[in-house]
Amino acid sequence: MKHIVLTGGGTAGHVTPNIAMIPALKEQGFTISYIGSYNGIEKKLIEEMGIPYYGISSGKLRRYFDVKNFTDPFRVLKGFSEARKLLKKLKPDVVFSKGGFVSVPVVIAAKRCKIPAIIHESDMTPGLANKLCIPSAVKVCCNFPETVSSLPANKAVLTGTPIRQELMKGDKEAGRQFCGFTSDKPVLMVIGGSLGAASVNDHIRKILPELLKAFQVIHLCGKGKMDETLKGTEGYVQYEYIKEELPDLFALSDVVISRAGANAICEISALHKPNLLIPLSANASRGDQILNARSFEKQGFSMVLEEEEITDEKLLDTIHQLYDNRHSFEEAMSAGKQMDSIHHIVSLIEECVLSKK
Image (cartoon, rainbow, N blue to C red):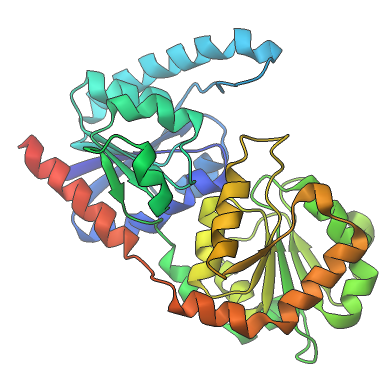
């Protein structure tokens, strides 16, 4: 029996591509185990699927000063020791990593245990966790053609990002019933990300009275980011995180506002949803979301508003422009090439298993 260990976590974007691949891996006869952090979002998402889950210590490696910089390296070392013990016990044929800091000790331990590891980078430029993993990986899958040139030539493979197939099977009317919406106004979906984008949430709530004159609004605001004062507002629903009903809510939505994490925007474009991207500011991140957003804007898939330029008036105007021009965005996304990422990556995993024998 072929055995694969999946790893990745910290945010939903480091987990959902792994989830997207699980049905295809099972179809190919793989036994699947998952290594993640003790309490990350990945634990809940994976355990709900009935996949054996193993927790390890995880620390974040930062490019900036933080008191935790003194303690987190010890957590990473502890995580490496725990990952090595787990891999020796589980004896997988291959490891597949979707990134996030929890994956670093797993990929490095895999190399020490002579287990081939494949890693996947969704953003245009590799994040710090993946940069640390590249020397220990046999292949590096990437999402943007622009990324290939910044990776070792013998390891880089352009695969695109695995998309959860169930997202394509949403039922518009089921979504309408779930939200309690009518059919006389278009629907705007706002996605804050699994951790919730506080500033996006704030901007939307500020213009909500104006927005509701023209739209019904589905607001996925992130854990602990609900606004109790808005409960019961007609034409507005808010959820911390949606799993089962997400395909129906996408089917119902006419336009989408989102951060520009690579997995989220790949899912939105695969669904051909006209979208406004508000990338995480370069002041609060390494700027990868800005690069992702500009790439999608250049291809005619998205409109982009950077956080620093947002005013209530500008945000409202841009949303109306997006809706008015929605058909041109839909056409651009329909004409764009969709890669069969799941099939491509599973083939690479199979090759690793065969080369080991």
